[in-house]
Amino acid sequence: MNAIELRDLTLKLGGRVVLADISLAIPSGQFIGVLGPNGSGKTSLMRALLGLVPPSGGTISVLGRPATRGNPRIGYMPQGSGAAPPVARLSGWDFVASVANGHRLGLPILSKAARAETERALDLVGAAKLARRPLADLSGGERQRLLLAQALVGEPQLLLLDEPLISLDPHHQQDVVELVKRLQDELKITILFSAHEINPLLSAIDQVLYLGGGKAALGAVDEVITGPVLSRLYGAEIDVIRVKGRIFVMSGGYEVERDEHRHEAAHGHGAAHGRGAHGHV
Amino acid sequence: MGVELMAMFEYDFMRNAFAAATIVAILAGTTGYFLVLRGQTFAGHALAHVGFTGATGAVLVGLAPLWGLVALTTAAGIAMGFTGERLAQRDVAIGLVLAFALALGLLFLHFYTAFATQATTLLFGNVLAVDVPTVVVLLILGTASLAMLAVISRPLIFASLEPELAEAKGVSLRLYSVLFLAIIALTTAECAQIVGVLLVFALMVGPAAAAQRFARTVVAGIALSAFLALIEAWGGITLAYYTDWPSSFWITALSVAIYVLAVVPRPVAARRSA
Image (tube, rainbow over all chains, first blue to last red; front, side, top):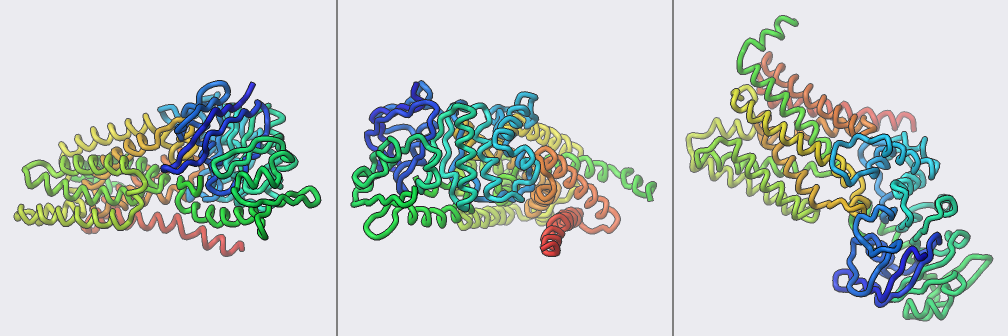
């Protein structure tokens, strides 16, 4: 079975076409790296899968059903959510627990099942101890783990992780990728993981979904991250250089992905002041 | 001392003051916690100013000021919830609306000339002047507000802590924003009876902000916030009884003192350990 099927999907954001006529199928249980320049539609695609952005054309099928808002079988980690340390001294536990049955009316008193679900999610990412400390005292990497636990509440079959590596140093980036890989193996779930750079993901992903210029390419890294395919997506001459197992995507003299990342890191910092603002699409 | 303390309860106005302060403090401490958690404290301040227009307008047409307060703050709160964060974050727009609200209130006072003392009461409150019918109204409105808050509290916390995730899970951010600001509007109207529209911030935001510094869970935070608000309200009235200074001054002074105590030691301690 396919976890995600897109048929002639067109997505618009404020009148601008972000994705045009995309058709693809992602099999269940795969770890997909989602790449592409700023504004190429990584976030928009995830929001469309969540039913938050209606397609302007075509259809989206998620886990065998049309995309609808509030689908409990999708776990989601929004972009930039780890950037802003909260003012309150609330423990990480409260943040993760707020997700359990969080959409239901009533007092914020956890049922036994909700408590168990919160603990299960925390155990999965090895953050049971971490969660007792105030969130404001945690490092970026530790906070990222709790956000991952949040996404896992409710036993989702599909995990959408929007730029989890932003503002992490390379060492912590590798930890996050390994943790997500372990979750894929243990839980047999499908994972969409967006990033600005392919290299941290190389060891973990099954396929790469590269977005650009309204188009998309899905396939193994060696099929997609090539000069001809990326030149088509970027609409410019792109060279792909492989050095000691690392991949560098170059346009003319400069490195494309690296530059995107720098730009985004500066952007992510600004977004920390206004949560909920979408830095890019 | 104990006997002397009890002596103040021999006066009707003191019993009314304590009853009103108890109701309002519990409500303000509870809703204020959410207000601070959501980073919307300025909205509370703004609603209080709008309330001044409502209160003076009500007097002008021959109604009790409380109803004008309730009507206009609720309308403004709901409007704010619908326009969403975009408007709430526009300092200049809100600042101008606030100034205009006070100016309109002034105009209404101008038409209703025999009104100078009531103006002071509206602006700065006078809990010692609260009568029994007002206490009853405060109790009914307060209970209704708390009941509404209890019903929506779980999704409200989810939407406040993780708005984007909550939205993805099917929680309507706008719906809860509107409902919450309606509750805040009622709380503002209640607080204005105790400390006046200009000092609502002291009772609604002070205790909650102090509680945020200590509580590690939402439930503990709400409880601590309500407890601090009670201490400040009761303490303020008691001090007013002994000093004959205005109760609103004492309540505000206690609120500021507790907030400073909650905030100051932390950076100092951090600097020492560094």
